[in-house]
Length: 498
Image (cartoon, helix red, strand yellow):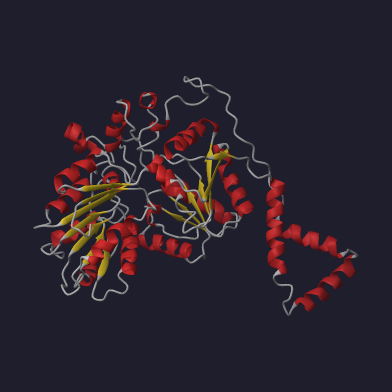
């Protein structure tokens, strides 16, 4: 990038993409020119904020460089005022387009454009915006595109807007996460809430992320955990920007120990101290498994990941193992006695830390008086107090045993994992096949203020009229897998066979 080459970077989350484009972007900015020189496009406001913050850290000792995130949900007037003198903007496509229409962003000095998480922008329906933005940059400029996957629509963009682009690819086999212990539990769907509480009480992580496939389930799990006495917050695209900012800040500063999120909303989470990830639902897309467990085990720390599956879903774990080159061990849910013991140990440890407190003599006298009055010994009184603190022993959670045999003869639904992939977070009656949170033609939850019949979200009649060119990346990849390739719809039996 420092040599001015156009770049295609293919790598998963956690491999250093932000630094890979951020350092050259900052290095090539002319601090004496108070005009826009670089545009970085991100799929969500959370990612835009995160990337802008990382760039500011990189530019900390370079004077005269101004970086600004721009995204929907923020007051446009304040953004316009803040744009004065900015050399680097990090924004979502919809809001960048909005400023371009208002002529509050001038493009004549732009010499570098970066598309970060390009496949996510495609899935969320931003293809048209991406192409319009790239097509309006005048003069000579450098274009860098970063993406975890390379579906045909991404390749189309690279062919159209890049010149002799250099491909840098990090192979999936290099993306194993050795510091993350991966386990799965075979349990009934009706026992997931109890299993979630059981793991949280047994392992007692300081910070934990719980992933659900739908926004509704995020709300339900958050409410359930709050009723159980946990400090928990939900995070999804139907929440206002203020609500999401509050939830994220509480999680970052530790005042909330558990964050329940959808895959897309979690893309902006960058917290190093996450000790555990719980997949309440098996992810709908294979890439999301890597994204999810990559939130723990960061910066040399160890981490844990737990995935809940019912008996019919065990084959999904095997598919993830195969395609992610990883091993996920099946474990039995910790027994009720083990959990009670863990809770008691934690309470006793916390209590012992206070044993040298100045008020202990007063407490001793109160206890001695109570023992004399009731005629009980110290151990009996301590055990009663401990029982009062840790509560009753919960019921055992049985493993889900499925004895039926599907048409494939392996005791599972023979339709394959691929049927679940490519759907939106909410399973709707429409024909949409994208993985973004937004349904066909809905207003973007990420604040980009335009209604779209988005590419990769189903695209409605608009995409169907495009014929083959409008075919979604998931349909195209599913077709490629049937032709013997490694398409993402790896549930396709013919593709696996070949």
